[in-house]
Length: 125
Image 1 (cartoon, rainbow, N blue to C red):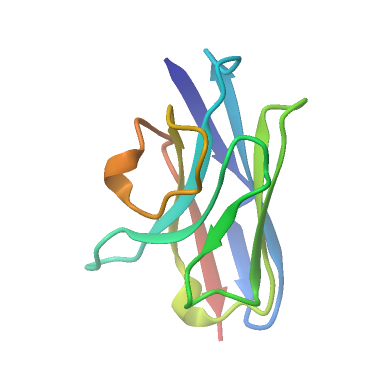
Image 2 (cartoon, one colour):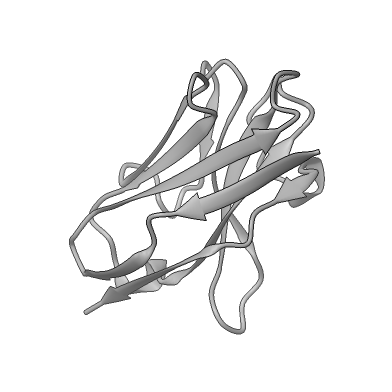
């Protein structure tokens, strides 16, 4: 079992930046890939970005490419999502998820085994 806790959400003005963190605990020594997803009210949960265990492979959704960056610090068991040039349409609950299949950076929700509780990001215009 891997437990995930997101932090860093809040209210930010359009054009601003925010860094989310996903802290993992539990059986982390076996390695895991991490994905960030988001869900706005009335919408499906959508993929944002992912990273494999080594950090050598990342995947970023077209809607945030060039604005969001994913990275990880395995010594701290933490994955970060740096969000720049935020837009009102980025407002959502952001979730991180961990996959036992640690070799790749997956975009599909079905690849992930563990999920955090989410953190709200609200971008004001």
